Image (cartoon, rainbow, N blue to C red; front, side, top):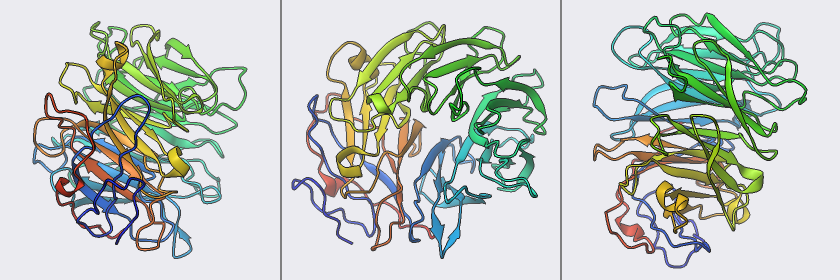
Length: 444
């Protein structure tokens, strides 16, 4: 299939139904397009494959990370939430997990790697469906914990309140109660009771309820969450929780659920979160926060939440709608920034990777850029990275374009990309003919 890119400098990709690439010319710098590893176009009409993407630890024993893709929308007139887990090595399908439900066609999905909760030596994962109806209770929400080895459900935890939105966000926070089993944080952003919950990874029992801030109205606390490692020195995993419209991010102790500190921004501050690792050299992980209505992302200190750096896009539309860790692309010892803007250029969308060090020092920091070739693709609606998918020892990343039109069907697309950037390489336009041979689409 031929899709017309926005740039006349590109040749058609040598693949069927794959995501085409285009190079934009932003005001701040030129950047290379990364090497495409695997492309998975959706196959069903209005399915929005790529609505969410995640990168996960190794499940299949090959030593490489895996990646997962969520979808929403409808297929054959029926709502079909679902997540597929793919091998990082070759893009083959490992697991397929069905979701539970929608609100007026809207899907709220979440996914997180947990580590080994069932003792079989293989990492497991959790899948949240915030819109799931349980019995006759509407949109209570539900979280499944699933074996990474077999794809079977280990246990299911239902939400508590009607319209509670339990499972809107998830974070594999590590061990918080000293039993050696990794635990999980679940966001519940329902209008009547906004909370985060710390659950025992062994069986899903509630360890702590973390209430949302008081007096701010319906801010959808729990819309986003990120595991942060040990921030308070007690040896247990801690975490951060963001809001959809509450202008703040709060950091919590995993051991007690106590709030450690908070940071505030504009109305969309905290809509997306990602652990960047230690950026400022104090031994604590720092946090990347998306603020898409301000076209900005901020790096917050994991020590006290203070602002370390703020990066604003001069030509963005929803820059920061999705954020992630790209890994250390430029090999300067710091994790780099992965940022999606799905509304860029008539909703064609854009994904950019920035050098954290260069950006903080005021230098041109743009390393990679991918632009959706067709209006409505919404590339960058989801991004994830930070683990090695292709075995070159470098962290790679994944992008979602849920609006991509494949074979005249708005079925969506997801792709994995190499985070390798040759040292000293000059920033210039991509040679798309050398992008490699992605896999064919897997039927969804």
